[in-house]
Image (tube, rainbow, N blue to C red):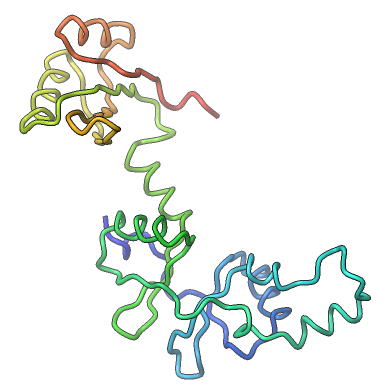
Length: 218
């Protein structure tokens, strides 16, 4: 899955000379938390978030009057509170690379650039929704996590074993823990009795970490 598959294309943008007051209104009216900042030629200069704008607003403890606070916000421009340069990602990047970049840079969105052209924006919400979809969250299914040796062919062996028990696999995800010699495989499947699967796997010497029926939390 690539960034282009999950990004919001043609995002709402704002000029750097727009007041923070007006930028916040644009953000609220359009239901967006992130506004790429572009110049008159459409070139990306930075990004401003709703959090940036709220931080720039006088707090409730201020001694300013409402008139004075509104006056300051009306004259404070986006370019004074935006993050620049913005950290960006190309549309052809794998989705996990965008997620890694967000985690490492401690940011919650990335403008998507094709060369010098702004073509979209991807947010942490987009990443979360993709993660839920990949793991099948929300759809009723049996979810089993096994701890296995990190050796070639182990995943193929486990999927074959589950198939022999009657399991119809929907998805598989791998996670690494503190032990470099082992890996956790999470299988999402149906076609196997929940009470039978774990005991049968344990009889065969497999290390069952967790079994859970998804779709129960509503």
